[in-house]
Length: 255
Ligand code: PGA
Image (cartoon, rainbow, N blue to C red):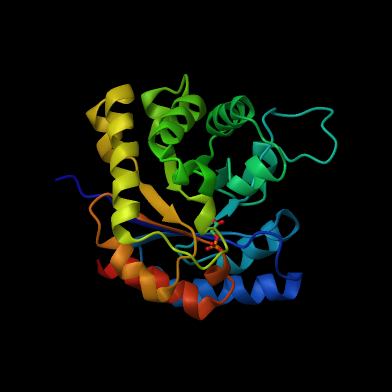
């Protein structure tokens, strides 16, 4: 049975003032210290990246962006390139979050382009996918995962795949307080891993962390993490308080 290190990322979304971001980042850095049992990442809004990177220095907490553009540079008003993120201290970028897919209309071809550019430029990618409520009600989730994995990862090399973390985030569970049961999460993660195995082989399927996102709290973390294919969590609301985020990191490390 392969052992994958647990991975917990906090997605702050469009929240925090600069002062709040620095305070939250500093508290997470203090709580985690140099402990490396769980890969821990925080993803503040773009304008706070350098300031938060500064307060994380000396800790093992990494920093990620919530989005990235698909081209390396040029006339793309309002966009942010992978190189800019790296220079701001980021090692990770979230790509394909459901809020970007559904609210901002991000298409699968764009997500694939972003994944390629981010990896080429040296970032690690937290690649989000998951079904909507309507898709689950029609029992279409496996078809959706298959399409999303295939579309987002098309053309990646093995070396690039080692810098991918997949986040399974059922859209109906995000920000709703309706967490997937550990069994529902396990079933979905197992299917995604099976698809990775069929498409990319055993090494990639066994090494790729598949984390769960959608209403993760300190209370439900241990149950989710006890499932063999659940390798961590992408945390929204509960990452905005250092105490609850740190409890999630701790619970993930204890499993
Ligand atoms: P939530 O968000 O924990 O607030 O449900 C998770 C996410 O969108 O990444």
